[in-house]
Image (tube, rainbow, N blue to C red; front, side):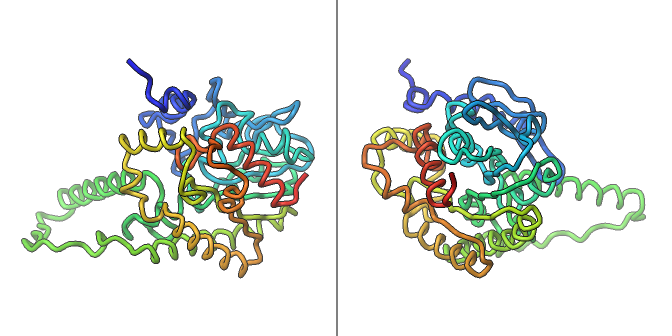
Length: 347
């Protein structure tokens, strides 16, 4: 049987999808909802006792829940792209390429959480800040998840935005609430009957999709709200805070490398990316989102950078950057790390 393009071009993704992210073994966490497997070991991805991915310098390694440098460190915060999904090994991730080659004057820690939104990125820092030595730099390399999650119904947004697996969470909570009501009626309700539901069925307002403008505005509002909480935390740590809008393949360029075309077509045949993210994945949507984030960051005084046009200017038509529309190849990680160090003025 012929190998799929994904198996042939990006064999490391099997490790991520089948070994590291087994949905049957998801690690549920208080407050964060979920985090990476702790103490995971493989030739592709390794985590410490808390689930943080290990980053590598030229001759050293470190992680927030493992071996820590004595002096100041730099943090790369974000979700799966910052974590390094797509990299063939820990040394190929963004924090590792920054530490080992492009901005090596201080160690970099991988402080990212796969599938996290901006709320969870902030909570992760709050929960584990006490473990860290002095932090000199906090770079938040993120953005796509908040916009993607803004598409979910208002009933799943709550006060702090929707999160991945929230449908499963709310379904389980609804089942538990219904069980509690039945028990209360049975033992303390003295035969009191609940009113019968109306025969008329109406389409819940909640099911009406938000417009693209509303989705962008919602994601920008959440992100800037959380950045406003990051500011005093960074100041208390004596750290410089920067926000970088991560690249999406379709925000970077409209024509893709041959390998990307093969992978994207194959992934589209087995996933619903186009159906779920189609309108927000266009280049125009990316620019509008970037403009909104830039205005929000300017009001807060937080430096903002959009990696998408910078990356677009740095690559040619044949350069293979992405293993899927959001995660990088090893050369993609290395190039983005070099561009990131340059735009932030880091050595």
